Amino acid sequence: MKGHKLGYIRVSTIDQNTERQLEEIQLDRKFVDKASGKDTNRKQLDELILFARDGDTIYIHSMDRLARNLNDLLNIVTVLTDKGVEVRFHKENLAFDGKDSPMSKLMLSVMGAFAEFERSLIRERQREGIALAKRRGVYKGRKKALSEADIKNVVEKANSGGNKTQLAKQYGISRETLYQYLKNSK
Image (tube, rainbow, N blue to C red):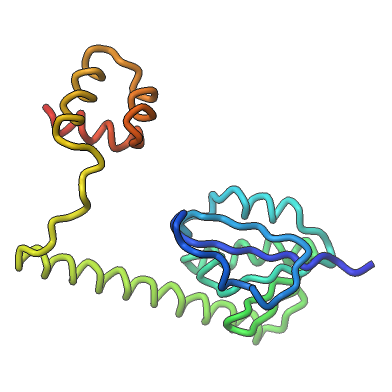
């Protein structure tokens, strides 16, 4: 029996489009995460790893869609190939099945290292750009989620013993944002 053709698709934010990834590949099932790739704690990735069986093939648009650092990339690919699953990276035109030659293992490591290096360069340029924009006075940072009046109200309610989780939901903010507002109000 031939295995399933599975696809793993990841975008970093909810409003990003997943359509361009693997659109030309006929898949039996897709696993789609709308989450950062900075760590491997992703619901659909975990589900994919549990679902995949010996003989299945997993298609991924590119290495950076699976993992942002070399260790995570190597670990995930190893977990899957140890189960008898083939992992194919479309953009890089590379496939790994656990029976790989030393050269293909080297290619995975080198390509993964380049992807990690590229991500580091992008983040460095972003930080430099933000620092320059701040010096010129054109970077104001992220817009506050709430108006000053709403911040005052939510802080007063929280300080009066209001349930912070419920307040965060009521105001449409994360608990982390609520705690930042509380910290900054002191």
